[in-house]
Amino acid sequence: MSHAYNYHYQMHAAGCCCPVCLCGTPMVSPYELAVASGDPTAQAFVGGATPVRLSLEYVVDDGASSPSIKVTTVDDGSTSTWEETAPAVGYQVKNDFLNLHPGARVTLDATEAAARLRWCETFCC
Image (cartoon, rainbow, N blue to C red; front, side):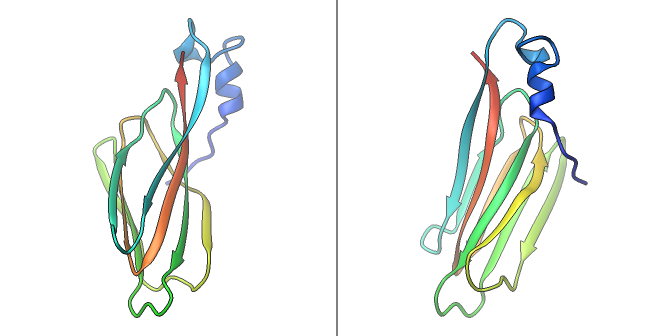
């Protein structure tokens, strides 16, 4: 299940900063998890003070016979997997691909392809 999360509202709901940053300044930092055929698996965890929206990008290797992309998440004790076993040739992008909470773990796997997950985390300074 996915939902849209309005960061602008969250960051301005309590005056000039988000409710979890009442005595700090909210900052946004981009993160990236990338894999390619030579190093096909990577893991990361989501941090920050608010939920994040992941975007997925991938491109199949030239001459690939069995390409695949797999994203596995563990969020609030639930594990879910998305897999593309016949990805289209050429650059593909899925914006707002998944929504995760701080503390979630994500694993990205690619076979005969390069893939990248991107997201931004909001934190307090």
